[in-house]
Structure formats: C-alpha cells, structure tokens
View (tube, rainbow, N blue to C red):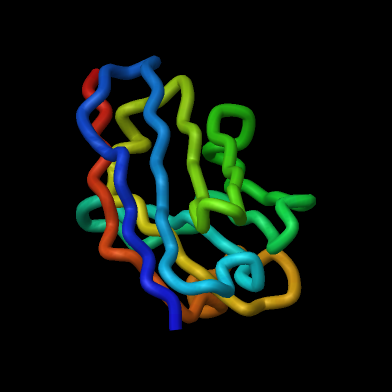
Amino acid sequence: QVQLVESGGGLVQAGGSLRLSCAASGRTFSSYTMGWFRQAPGKEREFVATINKSHSNTAYADSVKGRFTISRDNAKNTVYLQMNSLKPEDTAVYYCAATRSLGLAITGRAYDYWGQGTQVTVSS
C-alpha cells in the first residue's frame, strides 16, 4: 500500500510556471511507475505524464509535450511535475498515481493508488 499527497498547485497567470510535488509513503516507492493525470470541470480525467521506476523513461500527452517535465527522486519518495508556459486550458485538478506496472502506463486503469489532487488554475 502506498499513500500519495500532492502539493504545489495554485493560481498562476498564463505563461507562468508551477511545480507540483507528490510525496509517497512507504519504503517501496522505487518499485512503482508514477504518473500525473488531470481533470477539468465537466471533462474526463486525462493522462498528463508518466515516469518509470528508474526514471530512465518518460511519456507525455501531446498537449503538454515540450512544456511539462516529470521527474522523480527515489531517495525522497517524491515525483514532480514541472509545468512551464502554462495556458488557461491547463486549469484542472492534478492527481498523481502509482502502479506496479513494469513499464510506462498512460491509462488511468493501470494505476493502483491515487492522491487527493491539487488544484491548478491558470488565468488568461
């Protein structure tokens, strides 16, 4: 079992940056592939980014590619999402998730554990 707690959300102007953090409990963080998802009001949850156990491989949604960067620090049991050049359409609740999947996972169904989410609001 792993518990996930996101932080770092807030209100930012378009073009600005935020860094989200997701702290995981437990001693086996390095055995999980981690992901970030988001859900905007009235929309379905969508994949944002994922990183494998050894942080040697990542994948991104096309909508954030080149603007967002996922990273992890296994010593700190934390995964990050650096978000640059933010747009109003990035406004959503952002969730981190963990899975024991052997490789990258871009669907929500693949994930076993979820955080409570952190709100990101981008004003125009």
